[in-house]
Image (cartoon, rainbow, N blue to C red; front, side, top):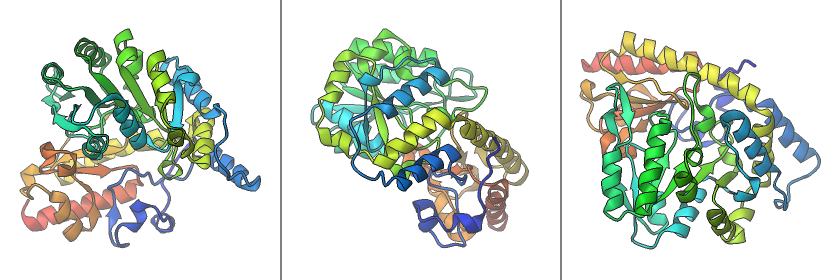
Length: 388
């Protein structure tokens, strides 16, 4: 089905962060919310729940988990046992509660910046200490990014107890190759390191790329890994609060189910209903959204080449986020601040993603082509006025 972004007038009626953080003269291309309407099967499921006044506590059933397992089998050829999964509020809670369960206070946890900013907060919240092993810029073929396997081995051998993996990787849209994930699993198993894989962007993998669930790559991965999944990014459901712990190890499943019951019962009833609908019936809508996203991905390349040739951009292979290198414009470590103030476009500062993001911004292109074009035009005009 065809999916198109809603008009700015309609979007500005929303009360979510994207549409309330800044005045109406600002084009908001920052937080990871899409401008597309809710998928009809999800809207129908939520309307039906309201019609039957189904707004109580979550019930003791596993329909959401079974829907996810069926989706994982259809979409990725990955067999997940619903009994080895558990719901909670969001991916951040999956990560924090998993780390609390697996590490001791003061243990080091590896991240690979530039990476999703809350990772730097989740680890101390769980009692750990952040250890950075930055991604390699260039990769094996010289054209992209890659995990620094030698750096990970040094960190693991040096006593790190866990690795917080972003798969696919935000903000780069990097879909990690299976061989790299296999190598990570082997290293982690050898050094006694747990791997927590944030896979919330997995359903947003583009055509021409193949997402590989970390827990599917080997027996080592299944033994040392726990994955975090949710429908929140792919179907724009962040406000409904539902995510899943996913394990493929009996031992880890037992530990996850041993977490306090409140970890699960804080899941939203509407979140479960919407998540089940997304995994059961939302693929046609998601395919349409991905077609729009991939069209905008190509449009952004053309716009930057034509109007901002000094900005460097590698097209992502997952999600709707662009990592833009603005260093040649000479706008300092935080060009997003200048762009917001002088061009009235809101982007994420690259420094939020680690020191490696100095001079970069993250741009959300899950919007209309018209809004994307206007945003680039405003930044290009600022560059022209600045002599950049």
